[in-house]
Image (cartoon, rainbow, N blue to C red):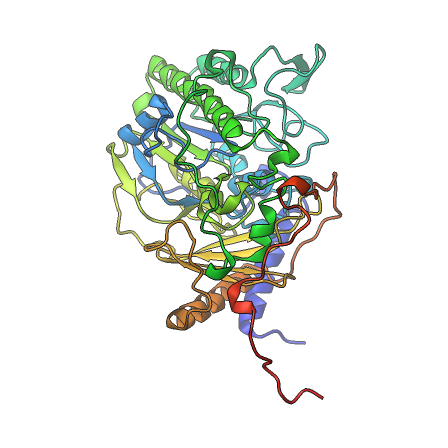
Length: 520
């Protein structure tokens, strides 16, 4: 059978990507070519990644009380990429997209239990080939059964799975370059110690890339002792409580049912502590992350390389704190998929720049490779945003594709696909009897009024649906990847808070009269 040209191109593209996962490019010599960029001086790079840090949980982003002077300084001295998003709002898939430059359905790490396919190529391997010293310090979390060093890194410090804020026992260890070393104390501080120590031993002969990957601020939210109860008495009346998420606004039924669940504000983590308690602990846990960034910046200054080093800060996914009556991530709403991102390099661009373009986690690898003076390989889905502060009108994407695949261990959230543009967002679900969603983000940033069945927006919904499936098809995402479920299913409801009753159907799905008078 002869494939049509478009399908043939997609097939060949997928063959190239899949070959990356089979070990075909096992050595540096076998990696795809990455020619040097003309006129680009290779720079040192520090990439700091945090877990579950939402886009507005920083002082400069307008938070009512959170103190983050060092994160604020990154925006003041560099650029704030205010519309940064992830391809999948979940730890392992997002981290895999960062390291590979690929959409989730290509790298196949679709949940937190999936090990990275053997032979997967990570962008730091290209940096190594270009002469960089590379270090990974912190949470890996793509396959929790081991913490062995992964390709692309000369220096390695990590732990299995989620890790622990404090050592769970006297014999608990980290993997330090293949050796078992006891965790001494609070993990955010300890990872920063390792990062600063590695920077201190630099001899300056080679450019370096440091990937500092924090466990914080993932649950169970545990602040450092010095920050405990800092925000015990703050006013939290500003937190949303899902007040306007109603059937008459065509809010999906599954969303309203999820309010009484592991990821809902009525039964958060199947406990009775409540939203306010968890949020205070979360904010207090952010403070040590800010301290960490300050220590790394100070070390760069001490080394005399601060102004010439590209520093990128990012969260691996967002986090809901009461929006739509939910906590956690996974879903397609803004607070879930939008992440903090700042970058600075004083010798490259001036401070105080705000970038409005839609940036993705798939763009991190290409951007860092650009800073290293090398081109992005053609198979990657992302593109470099390094020139954006100085070239705000450079060509860029109009839409960003979001995917999430249902997990049996957290069955509340269905498989979903979303298309996020500058103004509108379209969300559709797979295998679910419910309503799709369309939001005008300019007039409804909280995504409360679903326009999917508004006749004035019918053409917008159709256009975005067509574009979504076109992008999925071009990216090879029409075949849904599946894993055998792993872990326990957090599928309980709290009777005291209406756990026996299901939510009403969305208004647009309920009719007053029969639609088919000819049924026989």
